Length: 289
Image (cartoon, rainbow, N blue to C red; front, side):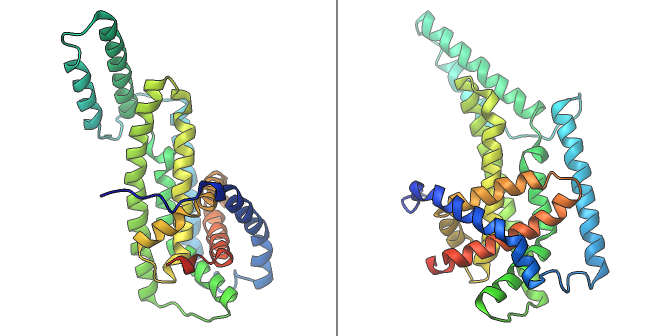
């Protein structure tokens, strides 16, 4: 399938970030003005569930960060490295009947690829790199979608009432979206690891992946808005790609704020779900269907 990114205008990114920042900055006041928390605390199980999820997220995240900084010998999650193995094999096959200086370069390349493979197996922390935050959005999707729809009702002066079927549909969609982003993130991690190793820029690997996962998180927030206008995931992808600046801004900042113990995991998804809805309405994303 041919990839087409002609619809993306990189020059619009800075303006999108500026607009997203202004909307996010005014979102707390929007929440207070319209008292969006009303009705949220009527069901005690909702609050208990939210607190438990936020606590578990905080505990797991900080344990993961500790292990990342102070690695210990333990079983690691299996990472698919078949593509790297094939590349190493290709390098070995290319070494026959070539000049000595060229062979030395290929040997150096093989060594770097082996280092990438080992780092994928021993040092990669999938939860630290973004997967844990994907799970958090999945668990809290019911609340994110609730506030997104409630916000859109205010902005459009409507009174859409969600049914149990709507929440189930939203939950299924979030699982699909985050599942695809997890796979895409894993493939990107392998690609970035190889490129950084070959170029001697391993120090930038985690920084690059932080921005990649940030964009994916921002995508989930904006997708909640487009879902209300019956966008398919495919159409949502194309629409959000044109607003990559806002998506990256929301996701990166949300990723940072989620690291605040207890309060971050609980408040951040709802805050950014509301902000993304307001951005979608202001930018009229639904008109790009």
